[in-house]
Amino acid sequence: MKSLSCKQCGGSDFVEEGDLYVCMNCYSKYSKYDSSIFHNVEINMKDFKSEKIKNFLNLADSDYKNGLFSSAKTHYTSVLEYDAHQPVAYYRRILCMCYENFSNFVNVNHINYGNDSIKYFEKSTDDKQSIFQFRNAVAEDYLNLSASCYKNAINKSSEGTYNLNDFDFYSKVFSQSYNSLVFAKSTIDYSTTFLNKKARERYMDICLSIQTITKRLSNEYLLHMKFNDNPNIPGNYIYKKIYYDPQGFYKKAYENISIEIENIPKKVEAAKRYIMEENAKKFRANPELRQKRLNQLYEQKSKSIGEIEKAKGIENALNLNLENYREEIKNYTFSFFGEGAKIKRELRENINSTESKLKNIRNKINEIDNEIKQYNVEINLLE
Image (cartoon, rainbow, N blue to C red):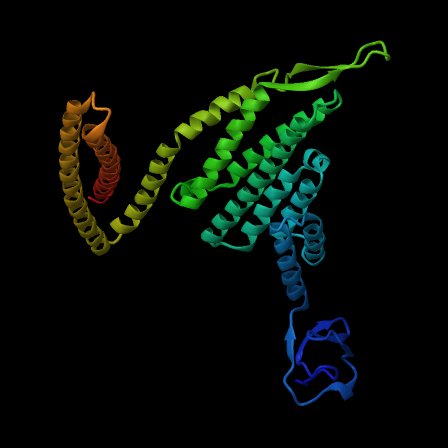
């Protein structure tokens, strides 16, 4: 194969663009049919399309993270000119438009773009970890969008008053914020989310945001101007209830999400159980691995039992100290001055310190106890 070096900068990194070779260093262009430009150096041809997408995407992501949504939108649009189904650019371009303008947030169906982006990404890979990470990134973006638009609408109402014409528009902003949060929650993979601390925290944030917004949507008062029939008489401001929720939809949604938040600890346990059951199937298929895993579990369980016994010994000692402090302080009930008051103050400090240590040791005992329960469950699944 012929070799080529750039006459302008001496570079050897080129891409093909139609009938031209383009230098990646200085962007000088050379015809493929000009034999005078070829030299005895190795030519390094790169994929022009993938390089452009990578560069535009890096610029767009940087602007997006820094809140430069107009610039980010332009770069994401450039990405889509080369790859119309690039997952990140596909949904984030629309999110940039929503950040720029309330009307876009209300009128553009940005949730469809999020759904399609997930489909495009899942078609491109079978790696479950990558899919999990992408889904959670989408969830975080939609959580942030919803929180931003909701917060801006609240600030707008607190700056002054709503005009009568604003009622319907702001109710749509609040409702669309709710829809974004519901979508964000739906993107998370339930089978693994509750075993991933960061994803679990994000899920909780989404649920709490839904709880806040549904409570507001089901019971909202806004200050607006009431105009008199006589144009010479100034208008006056009154409170009026905005019935966003005549059928009780958001009231019911608030009740449901509140129950879901209460049940998250149970979902964590259910997720752990699911993983253990899947692992148990693999171990049972291999007797040698099964026995090795059982030995590990018995060893870990024995170690945890030793730790819990040690922790309970500390708990008993702290309880005894606390009882002694409380009994001793009774002798100084009416000591308000002098040495007696000083001793009483020291005893109170000792009581507070001991109670804090007791709380910590009890939490540790509960954690170890939960570990032992998990070992027992897995042992039962393997035996």
